[in-house]
Structure formats: structure tokens, C-alpha cells
Image (tube, rainbow, N blue to C red; front, side):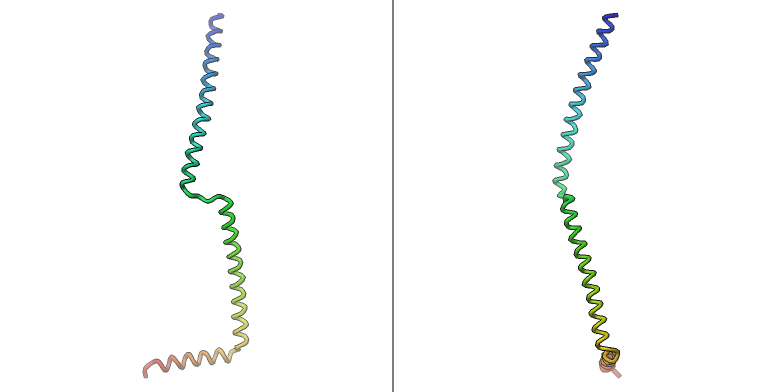
Length: 106
């Protein structure tokens, strides 16, 4: 009986050391994989999250500025057309029609 216990103790020690070796090997494999992945990502020339967020903020600011300027242009065009009145627009249409009739052969 004592020899069986000794055999089980030997197996337990063997499996314990094998498990420790496998855990060490697992850590080595993970580290090698991590290093290889980092090299691949560096070669891909990806942007960092901080750079992406900075460019995104600039794009949002540019879009807001564009919308503000578009509203300002629309307001200025409305003011300019209101100041010129309907007679100025009609005169411009008449002169455009007159120049078109002069260009066309009779």
C-alpha cells in the first residue's frame, strides 16, 4: 500500500511540475504573440485614439463653421434681394430676355 501512495505522490509531483512548465510556456507564447502583433500593427501605420479624436473634433468644428457661414450667406442673400426689390429683379430678367432675343436669329 505504501508503494501505491508513493507512486501517486510521484505522479502528483510530475503533473505539478508539468503544469508549471506549461504555464511558463503559455506565458512565453503569449508574450511572443503580443510582440509580433505589435510589430504588425506598427507596420500598418494606424492612428491612435487620441489622434482620431483630435481630427474628429476639428471636423466637427469645421462643419459647425460651414453651417454658420451658410446661414450667414443665406441671410445676406435675403437682405440683398429684399433691398433690390421686385423691380430690380424684373429689370434683370428683362435685360436677360432682351439679350437672349438679340442673340437669336430672326
